[in-house]
Image 1 (cartoon, helix red, strand yellow):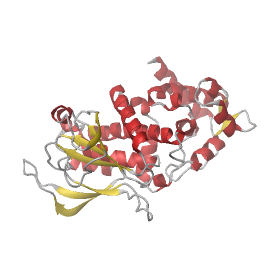
Image 2: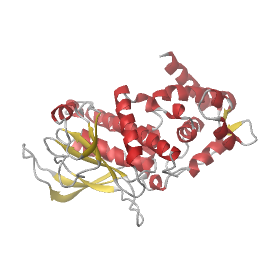
Image 3: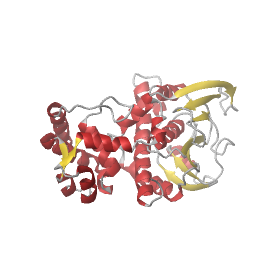
Image 4: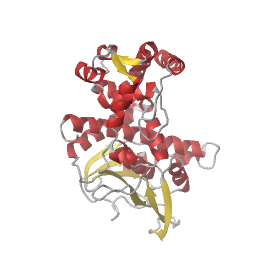
Length: 345
């Protein structure tokens, strides 16, 4: 609690004391500010420990302190294990620290082409989520580490690597998770990683889930076609879901068809995927997912519990962002591992 209080205080000092001229490092945000730019730099170029979401609060506290005192990332960052000495010297040059201009330029050079293709409103929302990894639940962090390791072990440039999110009705959590995973992968330059969704008892793509995704800039449009109905015989429309601009030749697209279906539906991959169990019921009642290369349990509370109440839309947004944060943290860790292993430039 004391660390969180100090962090809020330092961030306030930074925002009041540092007024550096700047332009956007990319098209997604007009000015995220020196503190956020420094955080992004550590996520990209810092030590594994500093970029680890488990240490996110400590990393932010250290950065905020440095910026408030010096207006730059100083040599203290090396002592605090935010960055190794070789990396620091590469960016600092002959200067005493890495100033805001150097941070901005370094980040700008690392923006993946696939991130530039994300819809601007969505990209800006993902930018914001990368600043709150400290809000990821410890149990989800543990599951996310397993997933990041699996991705790093199976990723191949130019070859799709599918993740199948499984819940009971394939109506809320599985679709939210799959969509945010595809967007997060594109954000970190891994567009070959694609999210799919399925259920054990299919129903329909819930309108509240549709609204939560549209609210952050994801385009969702009905195709006019309907998939087979579930046991309740509710209409099961098929939607076109897009999170970015059309791709150049040879690049993965940024769209999919989404509807409620069994996880083994023909629309989903049949082998070589990671099955992510995002609800307790499906996790308990589906111990084996046929064709899965890896099965990982990461259950979330169903936002359905809030349907019809005052907090309905807020709770759908909360669940969307909870899953989005985790997927961004997973893709960041996978990207760093792939770069360290020479599998990704």
